[in-house]
Length: 142
Image 1 (tube, helix red, strand yellow):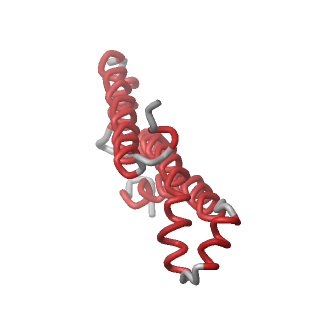
Image 2 (image 1 turned 120 degrees about the horizontal axis):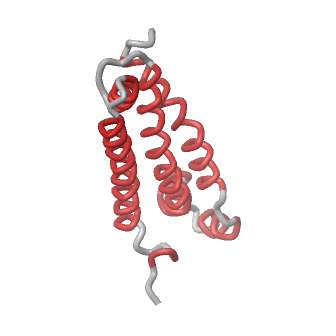
């Protein structure tokens, strides 16, 4: 589990992403309106039905917000772990190597590519969010 090991880079990204995503998801699952929960229970809904029809749809906005944060944190974690981790390939390595050799245009091009990849990942999550939650108030047109 050394600096050159790919698993260490994955572990860094996982630690960066896990806690914000988990906290947001749990918050979404637990922030169900108590009246809706009582209504489901009065209809004798099982716990699985309550999860599937009430808790999960209620948690989707929280989950997608967490995924948006997670994609940017994952990009940052991957770049930083390659930059400092003694890697011999990847954008972080390219940024560090080009900057050390005073090849600043190449270094900045790698930084721009990393930023564009982060934006692309964010936009993909936003598109999936829009496709999965057309009913959400933030996507309604007036």
